[in-house]
Amino acid sequence: MEASLMPPKSRRDAWYKEPWLLLVVGGPATVVCASLYTGYIAMHGADKVVAEDYYKQGLMINKDIQRDAKARELQLNAYINADFANGKISLQLSGKGKLPESLQLSIANAAAGGNSVSEVIRRLPMKQIAPGHYEGDLKLMPNTDQGAVKLFHIKLETTDWRLTGDWFDPGQKPVQLNAAK
Image (tube, rainbow, N blue to C red):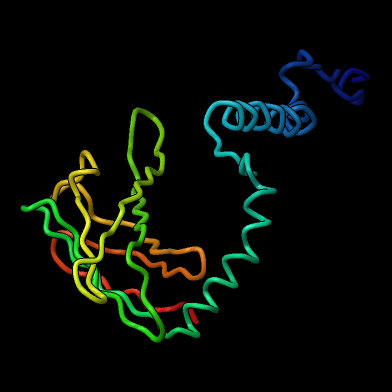
């Protein structure tokens, strides 16, 4: 009868079979695994947060603001059309004041190569063929045909002013650039 009044001996499991072990060690182990994975992503595929020429870009901001203001003051508007079949790009520029005899049109588009995507910038000289009408040669831009390019970032500029904008589907429709407000 004595044996029935005594509590049974508790059987202890091995330390690795304890349920509290998952709570005590599981959380920190998960955090360590997640941080190792995040470190791997950061080292092998993350974009750079700061541009290499950040200081130069910062200095150019004030100059760009002044050139945008000058374009507004001159009430500049540009109408650009691409003729991929003939390899020509035409531009009509209107505004107050004297228009330049030649312009430079910067065209940027994304190019995918391997695991990265980079921005390719081409600068096309535009020659004046009539007052306010300019023409450039698209053949100076290799690998741009009507079906391949769907978006250009356009910058038309001189030392005094600039016009910028995005050109969606350049093979199908022209683009109009207005002075930034």
